Length: 315
Image (tube, rainbow, N blue to C red; front, side, top):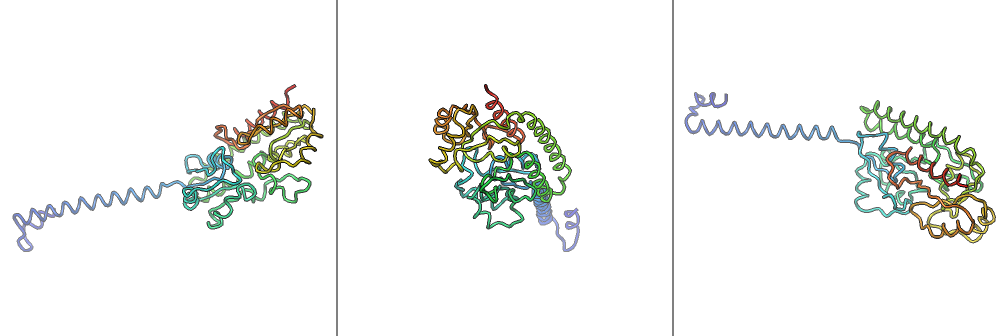
C-alpha cells in the first residue's frame, strides 16, 4: 500500500527512491510487529507470574505447598538437617526474603535467626504462625507462655487445621482468582487430618500412662493433645546440655519403666542411646521435622504416629 501511494505522486517519488522507501516501510512494519510481540509476551509473563512464598522450615513449607498447589512457588530456607534455631542465612537467602510475596515462619522462639531480617520487611508480607489467635498452647507448670518453650505447634493436629486456615486466607489475598482451588485444597487437607486425629485418639488411649522420653522438649503439643502423661525430655533445647539434677530426676522416674527413649534424625544419638541403655528403655526415632522425605503434613504426622505407637507397644 505504501509503495503504491508514494510511487505515483506527492513530489514524484519514483524509481529507486520509491523502492528504497518501500523497503524502509516494510522494515518499519516488521520491527513494529516484533516489538509488539515482545511487549505482549512480557505482559503475559508478568500476568502469569506465581506468588513466591518463602517458608522457614519444612513443616511450614508442607502446609504452603499443599494449599497453594501449582498456583504458587514455595522455597524453604532451612535444609532438612539444618538447625532451625541458629541457621546462618546466606546472601541468596536474604535475596529470597526480599523478593518473597509472603514469608511464613513460626516465630522467634523457634527461628530466632529470622527475627532481625524479617523486621525490615513490610508486615503485610510476613506471617508469624505462632501468633495465630486460635492456636492451642498446652499449659505447663513454670511456663506462663508455653509457646516460648515448645513452639512445635504442628504436633497438635487441631493446630495444623487452624494454621492451614490462616495460610489459606493469606494465599487467597495474594491471588483472589485462585480462591476456589485453594479452598478445595484446604477442605481436603482438613478432612484428612481430622480423620487421622480421630484414629490416633483411639490408638493412643492405651498409651496414656506409658513413659517416654524425647531428646529435647519438642513433643509437648503431641503429649498434651493425646493426654500422654508419661512425657519427659532429656534437655530443654537441642543446643543445651542436660543438667546433673535433671538427669538424676529422669533416672528416678524412668529407670526400668519399660518405656521408650526417642531419638531425632538431626541430633547426636550416642548420649541418648547411652541413657536408654542405662534406664532399660527401648529406643525409637521420631522425625518431627519431616526430614525423611514426606510430601504432605499428614504424611509427617502419620509417620510420627506409627513410630510412636510401634515403640511404646513393644513388649
